[in-house]
Length: 230
Image (tube, rainbow, N blue to C red):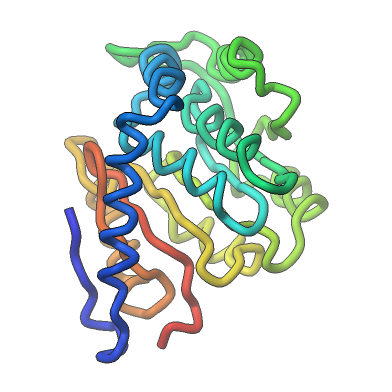
């Protein structure tokens, strides 16, 4: 699903970028990475396969490191790590997860952080990830992230946590490079998170801080950090 924002400059044409992204998703559906990501999706992720394709793709082509808030048991983290491995340069990945338990019908977990580490190890990427066991707004988490990343270091930001993506973009926005890729889950969906997340994302789009590329799968928003667009 594609949409455009009234806040975009009248002479800005990003249709080619959007169509290129759609073409890339179709390409990955018949690519050799598909088999591996299908397995990741069935064992460790609640994201749509197309979203895992995009996370893999962004991690592969983005300039900069990767910051993830809310990996749950690691499906998106694994996709990002595989993409980073297939990229032309070394990329650091930090993933922030508070842990706990979650009685989900598809992939439940009695110990989220333990299962996260187990899945990362099973798919051979545990040593590629710096895991932070905490909440994104904890002072210890903020310190850990800022000890690793500096201004403009992050080329891919993944958010699948609570209903306050605006909080984390406000705090970590200076770490994101211009045109940093953003993957924000629950933009649409039946859960309670969707309404506040959609409102926050739409406000940031209207303010010119986010450039929308549409939403994919079951309602995951895809776009870019573009604070200088206005």
